Image 1 (cartoon, one colour):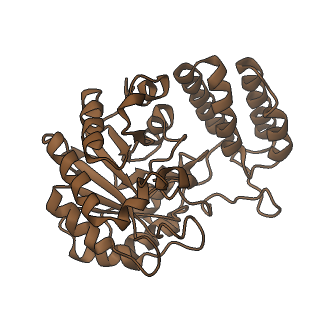
Image 2 (cartoon, helix red, strand yellow; image 1 turned 90 degrees about the horizontal axis):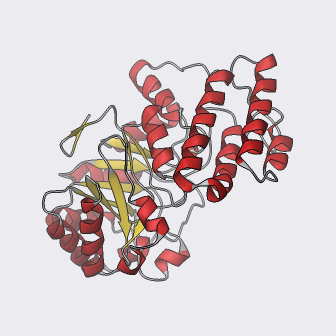
Length: 350
């Protein structure tokens, strides 16, 4: 797929998720089938540029191109400065967050709160596009502020006039948060009149759902969020299904054991020993969610304080699993069940 001057493997994108789409996760998703991965959002507040967190988020060493970085804020001047800063630090695409429904973002009139102020939307988009004339700018939005104020078509026109090169849309309003089901009619309506690529987002957690959303919206690409947490191979499963109409077998236990160990090592190196252990816990939990015997394992694992103990716990769990199963054995009933290919979680942020 050609996208903004880049040749991508496919039309499957990793949604930007706060606290999730760090460099190790983005790299892994690309390795396992994603065509593009957008970074977790970086604040436009220039006072934070010197923080360890901001420096880490701007670290793209070894990352496969194209490098897409999402920025969030409500000041056109500061958003322009944030765009320049990230381009100087390796960003090849700048994505603007006008989709996050989180209160801490919306309370400062950033994220999806901006959809209520179309004049400010235009000012921000024009400021960012003008600040980085040689770098493509993309925009992430929701369908509108609430069900009575779906203004995605107006935002599309503002974006096109401002020079934005692609638009991703989550099929819910700001007021919906993550409740109910995503709707795709608004995305389809936007795609029908758009002159730029449209990316559909929301509730895409299986190969069948991916096919359905593409057919329902006619979108140019799909953006997948929380369904990929602990399941980065979802991208290759969807890619295979879209290309062939058939399903891959669930991954082999041994393969995912190695994938998880590699992911953990990247996290330890990226965050350091102390923070790495804490970050790794949530990823280990996501990888093992729904697997036979995983509930007790996760409870024990979350108490482990060191890298060595985490590694050993993962090795013991997957080695025991492999003794009786060639492929990942998912529970299909009970509170811990999550059958592969039928994840019901939607993306967390942006």
